[in-house]
Image 1 (cartoon, rainbow, N blue to C red):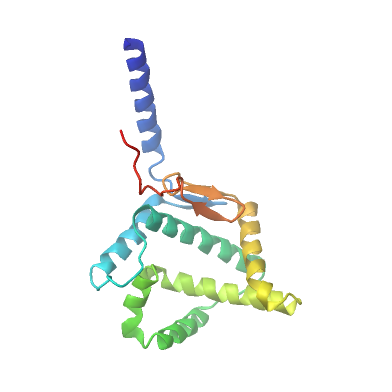
Image 2: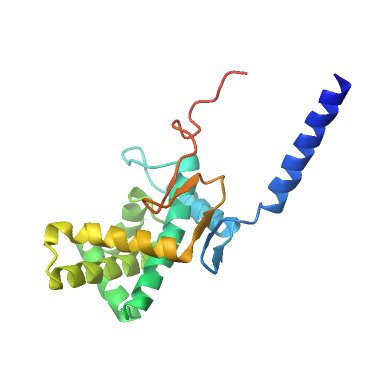
Length: 201
């Protein structure tokens, strides 16, 4: 019994030490590393913004799903930036500003933007990155159509480009966000309940 207890204690210590050593790790895409603290800061920003509005009618994600969503966004941004670089797509601040004006006009003005971002589970500090991604996706779609690919299949080509870039660069994800699926280039929940159900002791 004493031997088993000692082994159990040793394993617990090793898990604790290894966990502490990787606490700073968030996600890495090729040579680009995004620390867990940066991803957490975005989540904290979103949670703080939610406190200032009525979110009762919004379909918001929370907990592990929210954390995973922001880790995924960080990965997708890097992947699309690399795709844009390889395909010589230049996205200027003017392009981003123009797309921002289009979206704010669609939602009824700048005053409605904070609520719209919260409802879309998007941090205000990530908005320009999101707009840049939209622009890159539009150009990829246009390229596919120009090559004779049916418009209905263009989005599938974008997904293929994303998966291919992820495979080329290599993606590593901290297990606290879930597990990386290279086939879909997405972080998946590490259990079917996503932490919603805790096994009975």
